[in-house]
Amino acid sequence: MIRLRICLALFVGCCLPSGSLLADSIAVPTPGGLIIVDISHAGPTGQLVGAGPPGDAVFRPPTIFAAPLPTGSGARALGLAGAFTAVADDATAASWNPAGLTQLESPEVSAVYRFSAREDSHESETRELEAGRDRYNNSELNYVSAVYPFLINDRNVVFSMNYQESYDFTQIFTARFQGSSQQTISTTTNQTFYRGSTNLYDDANQRVTVTNLTTTCAETQINQLLNSSLLTDIDFRQRGTIDALSPAFAFDVTPTFSLGVVLNIYTDGSSRGNPLESTLIANYEGDSDSYTEVTDTRSSTTEAQWGGVWYGGAFGTITNAFSGAVTTAPNVDVESTVQEGAYTVEGSYREDNTTDQFYGFNATIGALWVASEKLTLGATVDLPWTGHGEQTRRIHHQVSTFDTNRVQVAQGAYEDVRRRGVEYTFPLYWAVGALWRWNDRFYTAMDISRTHWSQYSYKAEGEDRINPVNGEPYSSSALDDCWSIRCGSEYLCVLSWTEIPLRGGVFWEQRPATGAPDEYWGLSLGSGISLGKDPGKIVLDIAYTFERGEQVGGDLLSGQNMHSDVNKHQIFVSAIWHF
Image 1 (tube, rainbow, N blue to C red):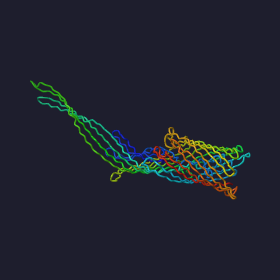
Image 2 (image 1 turned 45 degrees about the vertical axis):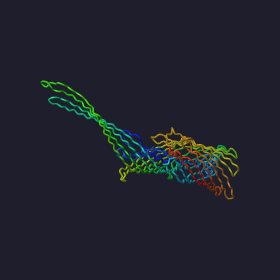
Image 3 (image 1 turned 180 degrees about the horizontal axis):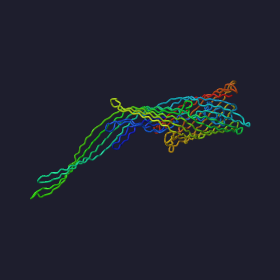
Image 4 (image 1 turned 90 degrees about the vertical axis):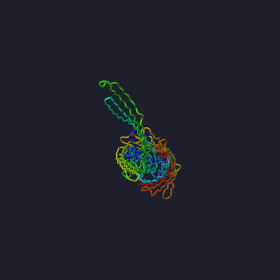
């Protein structure tokens, strides 16, 4: 995962309504979007605001920045930089152009093993992010096939069974981020209190009624300054493959034109111990400090009203009646207090994703035309397909809070396990190629291909379809389709006891990214040796490929302005047995 510039950004609301408490949070950018993790902090009056469970992370697919392998396999083909569409004349032909299988005249079996080593050098415009280099490698059985040709009406017909590693999702990303935040939270509350009394004064000379009403307006203003800083270590690891079991059939339409078709039955690599799975771990520690000023203002006024009568004359008759009112000047009382709180937090967020029961189907169709003794043309189309699987997401989050005396004052833990059906829409791929034979020992081949990555999408049950590259909605975040150009040559050294080929090639290709595709270039070298003669001949081939991408992978952490320089080395070893 991690495109990681991992800017663990701290987010706190700037203004809260009366009585609200908002937890300090960490926003962790990942290929599928932000993961919001709460941390404890001091409330406006010094009380501890405990951490809640992490935000509900969406389901997300494996990152594809490890990039799928080329469409085909085989040390011979990759020694030519993958320019094999118009060549396709060995037991790996079904993975490049199934029509080429008709060039095989005897049964063959093949096996290909792959060794890969990759180095990603990350650069970020953010000083808080430390993302240096990630080095990782893996090795896998890449291809196994068996080919059986036979004749029908003097036309060559070929059946083959193939097992191929179609997509490799190996990816590692590590980073450290020092994040800080200063947020102000202001609240104001107003209340009004009333207190009234009535007193009666009565004697021989007068009767007076006095009514008092005291009105008190109370205002409480809280201004809180939250300072937070966190040091977070991010570790993301992903592995797994999508494999294909691919029966293929090819036949000669004419002596110079052939057709072929492959049915690809896709599964995940769990059957050989390489399932689709990823782990994201974010370990963090830091401080949360609070400085709060509480100001209470009370303003009281009293309104007094009175009325009464004087007694006088004979028999206590009323001689005078009177009334009046007065309002006192406001009595203002202001009291201010300061509350400080400081806590240290330590926590860990872990998310594991595993996809199993994965399956999908599509077909690859190819054609090969021998236009002349010098020129051969080839074309292949790999049809779009939909993959289905079951994805299990496990989240574990724990956080501990300590006061200034290093006494633990709070501890929280959260566990969540969910399983949903997921759907991948994989793109259409097509390639055309040409082969030019300079003589019987030397030829040059060239391929041009296009992968319609704009069709690539991912959907989890109950959630919207997304663009797997950046986690944005698929409807508003389209990818561009990507081109590639491959060119390679082979020269055959014929010795008295064997044949030794010398191969080399170069390639340029685009890979999916938002905005514009990333660009990679590479070169290849290869050779081999032929041992024995038919039947029973064994051909051993080896190929080395190097690819480089500069300023690529900007979507690894969406919106974080991080790019990577990628160097990848691969060695392919093939063995083909003719019998």
